[in-house]
Image 1: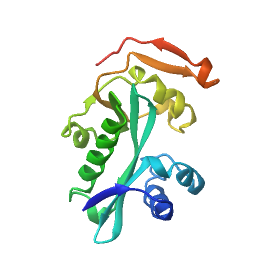
Image 2 (image 1 turned 120 degrees about the vertical axis):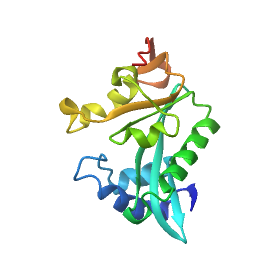
Image 3 (image 1 turned 60 degrees about the vertical axis):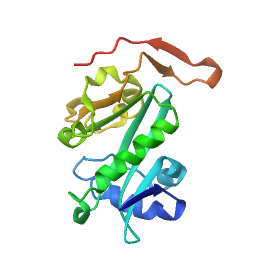
Image 4 (image 1 turned 180 degrees about the vertical axis):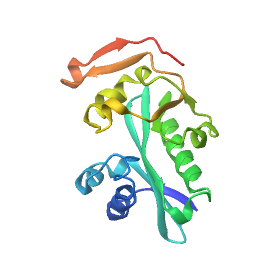
Length: 175
């Protein structure tokens, strides 16, 4: 199994991999056009020429990136494809000089084995502002927030324009 950066021709396979888990609420829906627009965020895992997994790294800034839309096929589950994906996404975060990588998951044990630690969701306000307000489970979230690295001390609260961003210092709560 090998990870590589996704390309536009991979968008349909990525959409199909994600769609399998949308109905259960495990993954948030991603439209084909959204996947195409953000294809540079995605990594795919191939096994004998077949795409068997995908994941994305969403950059909030050097202070934070999120691993998202991570999934593998049922036949690749338990065979290392997930680990290959996470390792590739963490390499990209390091390449981008990101100091903290977060994710929200229902399988914290898998990510804990890779060094991620549980944290209160409130310690990651960038994520909440980006996705949680649109999530159908917003008021009944059952995902566990996890992080690796140094929890952010700043967050971008407003994105009016790049010259008008407001940075606010937050106190990390590593509980």
